Amino acid sequence: MISKNRIFLLYLLGLVLCFEKSHGQDPVFSQVFFNPTMLNPSYAGASKDMRLGIIYRNQWTMIDMPYSTFGVSFDRRIDFGPSWKHSFRNSRYQSSGRSGFGINIMSDVEGKGTFSRNTLDLIYSYGIQPTYNSHVRFGLQTSAIFRTRSFSGLVFPDMIDPAGNVIGNSDAVGYTTWNYDIGLGVAGDFENFYGGFAVHHLLKPVEASFSGGKAYIPRKYTFHIGADFNLYKWRRFKEVLLFSPNVIYIQQLNFNQLNVGFYLSKNWAVAGLWFRENLSLNSHSFVVTLGYADYMFRIGYSYDFSIMQHGLRGLPTSSHEVTLGWNFEYKRGKKKYRYIKCPKF
Image (cartoon, rainbow, N blue to C red; front, top):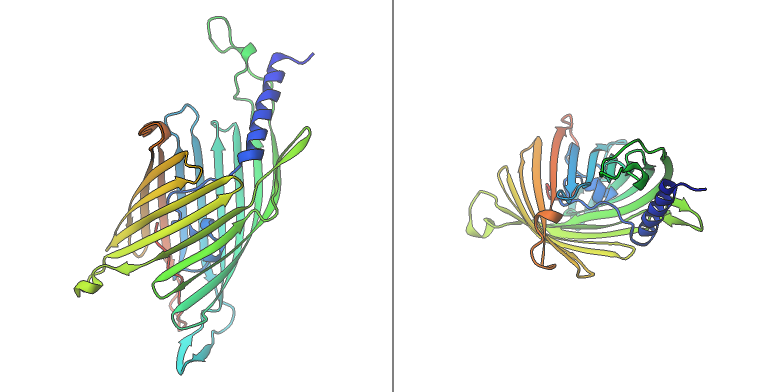
């Protein structure tokens, strides 16, 4: 006869797997451009420097078991042979046909480690320069996904005595599965404007198997567009006050999200304000970002809070995000390249 804790475990697994099958989605960061290769693989090697970034997100901090996501990314340019020049409308410009490499490591933990997903992404990108003031890059991402279920920390009904104290330990064991995946992306810029499109989970890898079916990770589609404007340009100041409006649309199965916001950058200071709308109209959030960025070091903080759903929800559904980044300059050489514009955070 199956014990009560086994019945409870099977019931819990059924709920989780059904939820994943219907509504599974990837973690979404607020500082989407801080680790741009997580947004779009074509950004690998798209900067004038090698980039190392660390990001931590703590979501729904007021509940007993918040969601925590940790990520690390690194990308750099890879040169294969000499660059070349072309002529275009009687002008000459330097080609940016070059390769890039990137690596992402991300860990998403739910329920204090009861459920976790760890991913390792390897990225290759290639860039071309169609015209003097434009640049296009293409990216290919391969991923290994490790999914862990750990039930040792769960408390079952037969482990609670009449006084409400937890006694004994659960004999439930967990398991780990792994799978592989592929993602594609394209990004580019033209004068002040930049943008791109990416598709993740092309193979729709199996998230979990259970009696009667399987749960898959649905494909995720991301479209982003933005621009940079110097607000001091029309006032004839030599200083730069950079205004960067952006729009990001993400669709994954039944999940649709629209992010609309902007950044203001002056010298080393960066500030941003975003409005994030779930297109099912049941979730509306503001995101406030503050950061410091110089030629070598970046640090940022974001705070998310929800609005307009049964009033101001505030702290119970708030999220905190902290980022740290370093830029490493390449050895000086004769080659000069163009790079895709991208916000710092």
